[in-house]
Image (cartoon, rainbow, N blue to C red):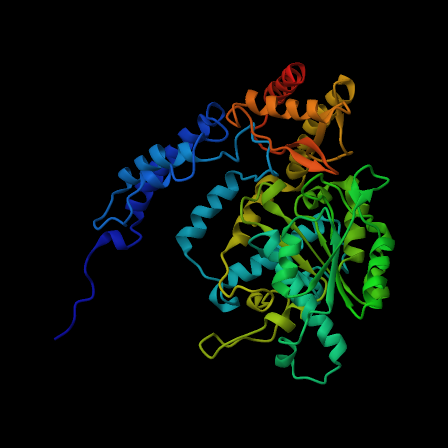
Length: 500
């Protein structure tokens, strides 16, 4: 007897009419949420477990319709959100999204594509090559840049986060160093399990903790170098400091493997003395990676052309995020490699169950061989839509708007006689404290500022610390932030200072 496998249950299928109706309902929720965003508390007043208490301990045994699900979202989830898109969200770094980013995610979800390899979704692979070359040209790359896919040498790929990109790089750097030292003695597969306890990675003590985590994943030693205030007025390290550290380690029988440089550190948006690292890779025979997760977006501005070129000249690899300050939405971490073989030596793998691949040309790289994941989301569609929707000039205008807002605050600080900048910053981050040597008074100011913010309801900032001094860390970049939001924050700072 023929088995009937067509159960005729329309809810399992992507019924266009039903989907359109449900999308309309969801859009109404999103529209209401965004329309009233500025009236919502930036951070909810919750204790751990409060959200979970609103949900049953087991999954529903029977179906729940979309109307009920949307009601639960409005009642239980949205009120429990820390609103990263809020006009007065000034914590961490911005996590910008946009109309094209949101629209693209709808299509990405509908397609349900898994980019295992070129043949699994040719559009995803080729569009990723196209948009990564677009980004490189936005970064003022010359036509012969090895970081372009068109060079057939290196190229760019989209990762989940900057932390993932750094982990990918650290493992590749470790294997590359073993290959350099092995000189063909061992088979490649035997290289992967070689002892790496003598390999050392160097970075500033201002590097984001994702850097040390990446080194741990790779199984190497970490040598943190104390950053110092450089001529640009912020903290970083120099090539001479790294060389001194490397010489110390070599004297103990250790082997330098990689240096991880900052361009826009998380704490104060500082950066290392990049010019001093020109030629460092060739001279020292180690991998040079630049983490520009936040500030890398600013490099598309013409005024940062020389810095962009400098990073490209000195780096074996570098990364920056499109999700922080380029309106691309999360997740959009861009990783660029000078020589793709450095990644493929570690991550290339395959199976008989995959499609047979043709010879690698410009637009059919197997990105599964460049990184850890096999399956890849169609993120290139989102990047393409954002870059096309705004154009380079539109994105530059957005960046300058954020910088202008930060400059407004910096000018207020400098003219106030009440506050002082802890470091010089030049992008959307501002770091300041009371202009006093009285540490206790500065602590009272920070405490009072938090009280006046109603513990993050009116606006959200998190204090940070540098050389034992705590300060306000104001991160701007939200597309919703207006002058009135900055004025409210500034007036609250003045009140907190008076009452400290």
